Length: 250
Image (cartoon, rainbow, N blue to C red; front, side):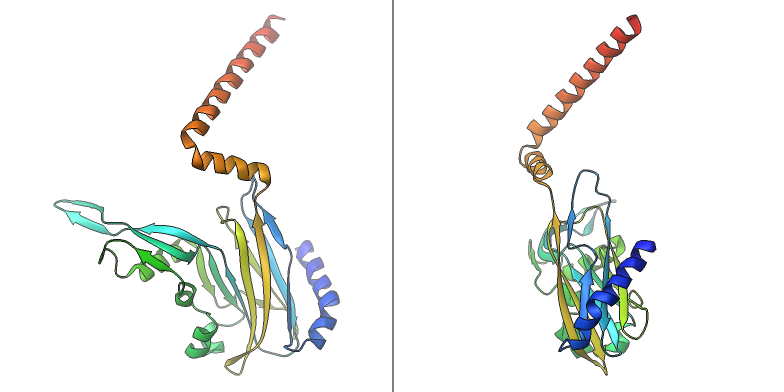
């Protein structure tokens, strides 16, 4: 909480003048411009904060790089349920969060939400499915259900805090299994049923060179990587056993 208070104080001091003079009346910033994925990474909390020059509903949208997802539907074969044909969905973001200071349906009409992509259906606008004809005709609905159930797609109508007439903040919890790449964060100010201000932010999720090379080797040469790790574990265990035996004799 102390860290958040300091960040919010800095936001008020550093961006107040910018927001007052900004043409669109909205300025937003991130507590971290980049996140490094290491072997000890367990997730990250990102603070989005900023200043609005006039009243309205603040909306924060985060979209991650796309990923490929394989979907299948359970079918019954005799007394058993088995997986049917697979459908590969490409172009769907791995993570999509929509947070606002008031429910989106109250702040904006359906046409305005669609125009700015402020729905989960719009997030899947660039996605496409590849598989046998008729294998999963409702793949969009199926993907949305799975993503929402796992917490990777979220809509929170009370996720943005309005601290006073001008200052706002929201915390984005990134899970441990986030994809690497550039994340697009858009901040909107809605008033009178329409968007009156907009700001764009970028978050870079990176992997250090050693971890990146190790992950590439594990993915491309899984058999060799597994064999090498097993041999290293055997050597380490044998060395430890010899060392303990020598130490006890001494």
